[in-house]
Image 1 (cartoon, rainbow, N blue to C red):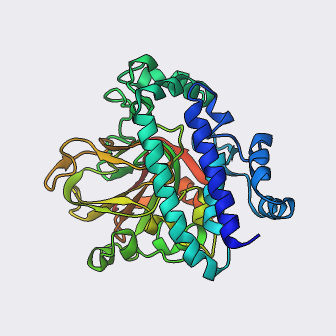
Image 2 (image 1 turned 45 degrees about the vertical axis):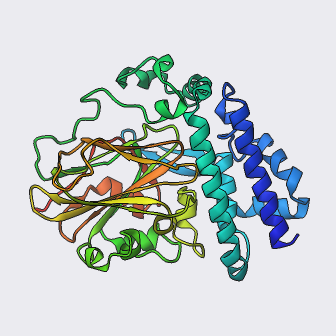
Length: 378
């Protein structure tokens, strides 16, 4: 099977998956777009387009999910990789280095087209039919009481629900009496590293990651975070899809960096030999001055596969805007996504449990927006 044939087979599977989801808004999403990678339906879709010998090599190489740790209970549990993430992984990893150079160009075009397509479809009023099955499939019923609009029928389309707003005070800052505390930027699966070097050793293993590239090829800004710490907050599709300020401070600048729509699944981040998706994906870089110290803090909202839109709350993306810890800053439209927070060297001491889970266990930790993740300086 030639590289071109292999890529085109993958394209057909992705298009089939998305079209199937679009045509079946009222179906359980775990039977369409979020079908687990281990599911027999997933296998049958791949089997239609790949010869058996190629299919077996693909399935033997890939894992089918990841482990995460619940911060409240300390329990580790397995999360299945979904169908569309599995396809995204394959688009990243297939081929020799020479083949990938050409392959990625086609992949970039493909993922942008499909991400824009899904965004458009989920803005359509007909996509309301997807809301209740999505809630049921991901067991979100108990979380509806936290929302400004708790009735699913009050949303105009699926994207309206996906970027749902919480009631005021639903995500208060943790450790509120401590002005040195910093918070999680989202309801997420979080990793935390005292230095960026540790992050690249244990977590960000794709080639091409540098602070300068992450920040939009800004060497001067990157120098401010040399030796500093990093928090990576990944939002799964079922998570509340807005992000919040980790600090009290003043917005100094916001810059949109155009880019791709690769999956941000941990296995894409952890895999050596492929490009670093944080530095390739579409993202928005907000730089703030922390009120307590005057130090810079970078909050980078990173889009992902099937995420075409990053939207700020009105007024917060203007230089001079005052923001407070746990305040909502913006929303992502459909799909998974990530928020990366950078602190200068010595600015914070990240909480031990989060660092241990990230370094010793190589696991993400489930936390909520506003929850304390560290404090400092001493």
